[in-house]
Structures are given as C-alpha cells and as structure tokens.
Amino acid sequence: MMKLVMQPNDYIEIRETGWWVRGSRVSLDSIIYAFRQGNSPEAIAYDCFPTLSLEQVYGAIAFYLAHREELDAHLEDWKTRGEALGRRWRAAQPSLASKMACARSEQAAAPATS
Image (cartoon, rainbow, N blue to C red):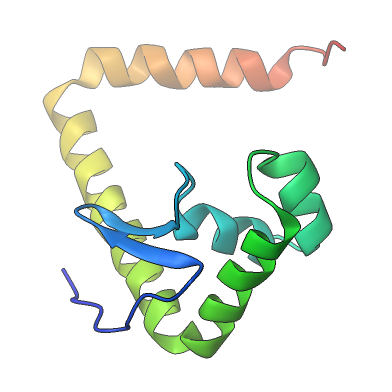
C-alpha cells in the first residue's frame, strides 16, 4: 500500500480511509473517476454528487491535477489490490461467485427501464 504525502487543503481532507472532499461523504477517488470518465465539473456537481457545490468539485479537481501522478498511482494500487482480493474471494467461494456472475449477466441482458 502506497503512502500519499500530499497536504490537504481547503477542499480536501485526509481521513483514516483516504482522501475526501472536506466536510462531505464523497471520496476524492469518486470525483477523480467521474472526471476521468469525461464528466464536466458541472455534471459531477449537479448529476453525480448533488450534495457538493460546484466550488468543491473544482477544488477537488484542482487538487487532483496538482497531484495527478501520485493519485493515479494510488488508484492503480487500489485497483490491483481489489482485483487480487476478488480473485481470492472467487477461489474461496466458487458457488457464490458463479451465482453472482449469472446475476450480473442477467441484469446486463435485461431491457433498461425508466
């Protein structure tokens, strides 16, 4: 697990489990993923995380851009560890893993409803 040494600012704070938008329940990771998927700051604020102000979203994105290399490496580390955990879980619970895979396939094949 990598240790991030960046200092928090007016928009970002450190908690036991990682980086968060200050005063919210929204992780910086969530903002980064939404931004990297091509969402505009406005879409992130109004559609993805309506509890955040546009200023908070811009502050989080600015923090990410200022520390992009470190945060991208952090997210890649979490992804790698999550994949390894998933492999171990599937090996330990093959029957349940199979049922979950079938349920995901059925959900993906189901017609979308509004």
